[in-house]
Image 1 (spheres, rainbow, N blue to C red):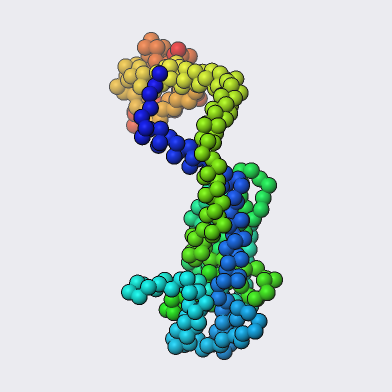
Image 2: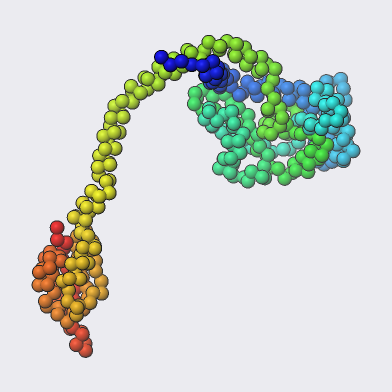
Length: 363
């Protein structure tokens, strides 16, 4: 019987709970629920700024109908005033003195902004890191360079158990680059882009804003309840996993036997020594053929070409003893059934005769 120490049991317990929580979060707490909460928070708590490129000004929309909007010029002083107004609406993000101020998130409305959208399907296992996955595959998904666009992802509902769908939105970066630099200089960070304030047009959530990394209180509460309810689940989960694995192994037994049989046959056929010897016997060994021809042909014979294809040999050359070549080749067993192809042509200046000779490899 195997004994376990307390540290080993604690490590196993933590790992099993982590597996259960990941599975439960992927199945019962999909990313779209988090997006709904973040959308509500961004719509009602995040300041909304409207850009007016024609007048080079910005308008901070009011939080309630009874307050007027604030219009500021697109100058350093105007952006500083806008940052102050936005900070007054988010007192919880104010930091103590002496600490670096973090950028404040704002929702930006750009009239006439063009937002292109398409559906992207990812495996459920990659849904938690969808931003990194899409960023790596961006040049294959859209026909634009990644450095020329702004983009964001919004989860969609799907019935596929193994895939998760996201709505990818993109817009050109060049018209917005000066405004983004002005927001950055004023310690403001756009968290979403849209062309109208009423929500009738597509909205582009920016993938790198800080709201996407801050879990809401509701999600924290649900995660705490799930942790409390799953204290006894690791044992059941492990038993279910073992049962499923055993069932899958039993179902794969016939395929395993077929695969092992095919592998054995493949190894037998592709064995290096067996394969080379078989091919050498079938089509002939070039080294053996050259050795036999060297011994059989007289010194007054010169070959211009030698061809060995599928066991058939063709010799072309010159010889002063061309008539004796067939007898010499048969005597040395250099080839089988040697014969001249065409007549012997006498060469000038007593150099002999040119010949073309054909035969096959000796088995």
